[in-house]
View (tube, rainbow over the protein chains, first blue to last red):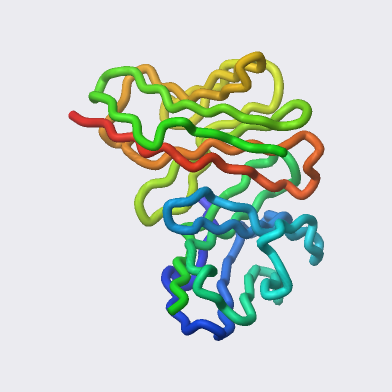
Length: 114
Length: 115
């Protein structure tokens, strides 16, 4: 069964550093998403991406965050200057279509900001 | 504002007994509802969804969910629990008018099935 792949599984960084979280969505999918889950809290939507543009973003997704599809297979989330409160599990997801199409999730990257 | 509530942090069930994991939602218009399951060190796996039609939705691994519009609920059920069903379960909703595909998740319910 095809799956969404995320690397690394765990990223440790110092506050103020830039991090890039990487995702390889399912190959024929066109819609891409990032979510995050702070320990003990809900899974929260960050951003959706289609046709090389952001479709929707949450209030969490401020100027420190950016997304990119640099080639035909990868989808990345960049945090320019990490804060302690960015420590969370970050999930990438993809879907074949919009709306009611199933979103398939990766195993996540645990980001620890020290 | 759209929201999802899972009122129980944990549900404990004996193997072979029926299980219910509760979910209520608040959304403008007709909701699209989903259940996902998360096993340790794995991503969220899709179980089932309700879009329209029959209020009883059947999904993977013998799970089903019942959509109740008057009670704004979408409880997950299984007639006979297995120890392997032990995991974290998330209910999610997407609003009809949400074009970006955003899913709003509940806080999750830890299901523990004992032999």
